[in-house]
Image (cartoon, rainbow, N blue to C red; front, side, top):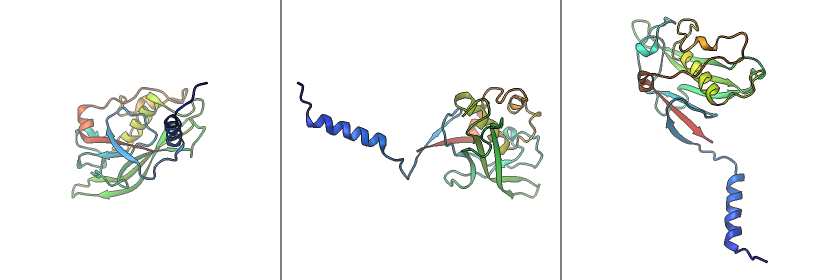
Length: 189
């Protein structure tokens, strides 16, 4: 009969304790680029760009509604979260705009904070993962950045307009300009 050393059981106990431990109250944050596949993804703007209130303008070319530039304040910018408020419906995601700030003499506006909600249970599909999660979040982030008209920018917005499918389209692939203006932070918890 094999006798296991005490160190083996100590290591096993340590491993089990680590796996069963509750998540830390202080979450670690790391920066990533699109696409991302995390449950909690706070998004912060890298650069501030003045804009107008014209909904159809593109934020990529320096127009449209832009984010207040933030780098560390989690209460300003875009926060992405799972939500069960519309669980079971065919809605993949939606945005909540909490506050707006008028910033310039030309009527420019910046978004103070914008929450992207991702449905925890899309009817007929379940919880979105992988490319669907990336696509939904990208779509809603685009709304926060000023893409209010779904039909105006089909490469970003229109693929998600579908009466026959709960989720249609593919993930938005951001340009180099996009990535220069957005940094995505995911919180591991």
